[in-house]
Amino acid sequence: MTSFRIMQTEDFGDSVFYRATCACGIDDHDLALILEFDEDLPDMVTLVMFKDLVYASYWEDSLWGRFKKRILGTLRMLFTGYIKVEESFIFQGERQIDEFINALQEGMEKIKKVK
Image 1 (tube, rainbow, N blue to C red):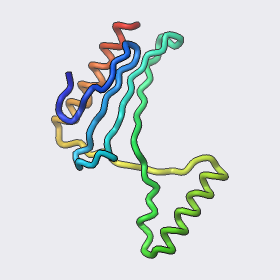
Image 2: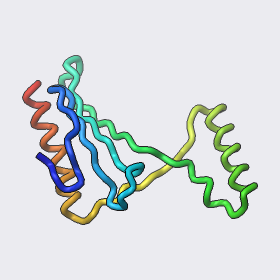
Image 3: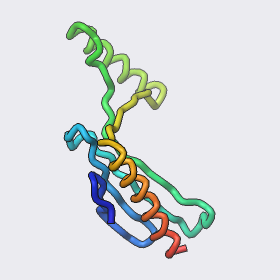
């Protein structure tokens, strides 16, 4: 039922999948959302968001600096098990934000029917 840059991709009854497109227009920046109800946890609804994240080594000035930053990030991931990254998602104005909220509300209504 959503429309402006938000679309439902799957509906499995207890899980509803959506895709939100970034206003920049690059497909790699899109956001996938899953609203899920688990019968074993009746008071909880899970919201999972998937997004491609980039480890930003491009802030370094030189090619050697970028390479060194990537190696350090790899070592940090190897020895600690995680790295910290951040990524942005651009909404195209108030209309897309409203559609995003509508998608969450619509998904919750579908999940409530399963409950």
